[in-house]
Image 1: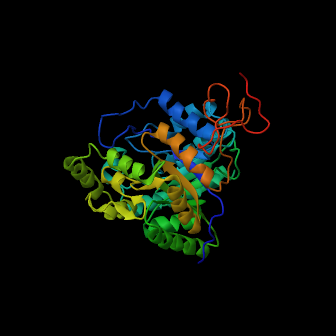
Image 2 (image 1 turned 45 degrees about the vertical axis):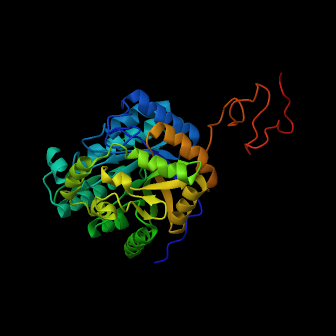
Length: 400
């Protein structure tokens, strides 16, 4: 099935509720992940014009629902993509949580459904199910949850989930429900995406591999009489020049030693996630072949689970690579960088102006002056955006 190229993109940032710093696998340059720091990142993303932020889930993360609830009143237009694992709470409670957060945020909630690919972590959360059974739970959960969110009186009996007289008394702002995002590379995951979600997410694989996966999802959705949109999760290391960007990528791994890589790969090996296996296969645990596609670098995945690739390069190169994914039909980009506060600014300032966006970028309405233009030269002259010959723009008068 043909997938239309994306004319415009929605770009989201990432809230690092499981840790942040200037280097991977190191305490050197690490950040305290408290509410003040997360508020700084969310506030920056809100002001810079990102469409939203992703809040991850898992035992290594602060709870995504609680953090989103805390940050909602501190932001104006930022959307919150809250990651959530079916099976930890029943669909009826999850529906009340989602509807409440959607209401108090003024319709700024999005939901990222995560089935969970680490049996050890799942067992710690009281889930003792096979890969196939977890996807069955996800399917049953979504069927019941969507019916509740749509205002139906629900009686449902599946293999794992049973509901009698289920009701949601107070509806969400977004009808019939906040948009659903989901990623899964297995056949079971693709089938759930095709039948039940709004946006299918993939991790940052080379474009040819991404295209093959999207085609499978689109074909499966067509069999259900549906269409889905597509998103991708990537890191970015963007600098003024290509050479600077690659030096920054190497510096990110400054303290990553063989023991750290071995420990991480041992954890990844126990997972039954097809997507995680695909990420690990890109580098094979070695540092000698990390550029797996032009400007697509797999160094992050040596020690980080989930999204393990970064776009590396100068601003126009990174924007061009994003446009290549847009040509495949991807219109959602969930980006991140280390540290997340500084890189939110860097990516917004260097890359966002080079992309066609579905949302407004830049300062929120009501700012005092028409920047950004930097600090005035000698308190008198507005810098020229060409950075070559500063001069006062026509129509402006210098104040001396």
